[in-house]
Image (cartoon, rainbow, N blue to C red; front, side, top):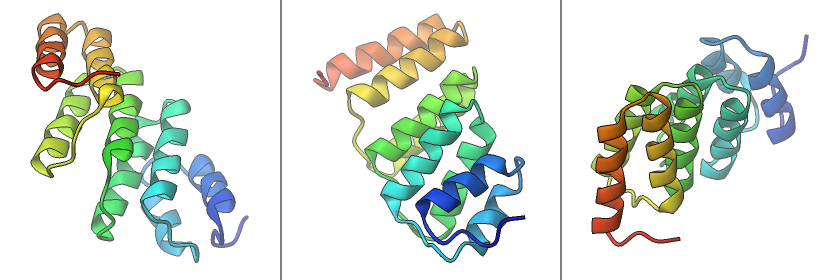
Length: 139
């Protein structure tokens, strides 16, 4: 068994091997205290491994510790949810992002549209695309 994570690499490995609902304990035990970029890295890793629950748990821990999520963090979480066909969760994250006043970029909108498409929510996907155009977001 590994000891508490002391850097991003060991924290990534610990989160990867943790079960869903164990992520908070892993993050709490770590001696390495990540900032927004490191949390974003963990969320992306969870998304790549199709663990949207773990990605959500990392995000919740980040918020509980008062670390502000940025555009890239929110986009990574939306992407993780979408990859796992959790379109409702992706829309929830997108709404939270707007509530927090964090600006969406082309990657954010693409992740939301993709999540809606995977969930066969064509109207929502189109609505999001239209919103993107209305906001003048381009690549």
